[in-house]
Image (cartoon, rainbow, N blue to C red; front, side, top):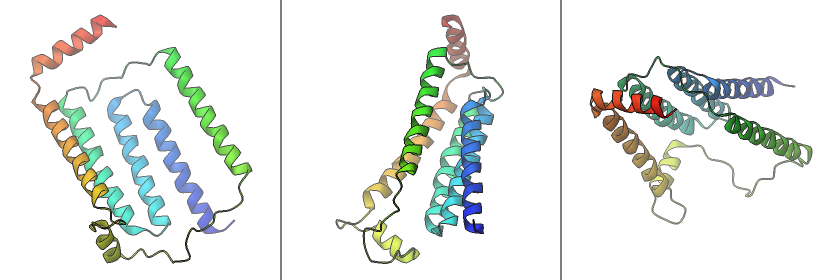
Length: 183
């Protein structure tokens, strides 16, 4: 095993560990921080694959945009230190079964692995100017639509953060009292 494989497995273990901690954390702020670490690990994986532009986009859009807005929303709702409710036993069972099915599916894929084939003979060009031209192109192979969808995602996250922040404090207290009475 060479150093590249060791680095890949270390990054993958970091991503999976942070993802599991994000899902299993009982405090909502800690879950958001573990999500942040998981997304940084994905950016590290992109750096490992030598696609620096995609890694930078991962950091700017998800780490710098979405997760920061999630953390601000948590702080603005005054629920940053509270523990989340434990899910029902049925939901835990379905989640465990889905995870086991996913692991069995991946194990089956690995068992029948025959190697990856490259769909074209053209070399991969990670040149930033070529990526920018392709991203803003309106031709059949352009990526202007996904580029605009990402901008709409950031706009929706910002509007959601503002809506959560603008809720009156009495409205937040009434909804938490109502949720505690229904549980």
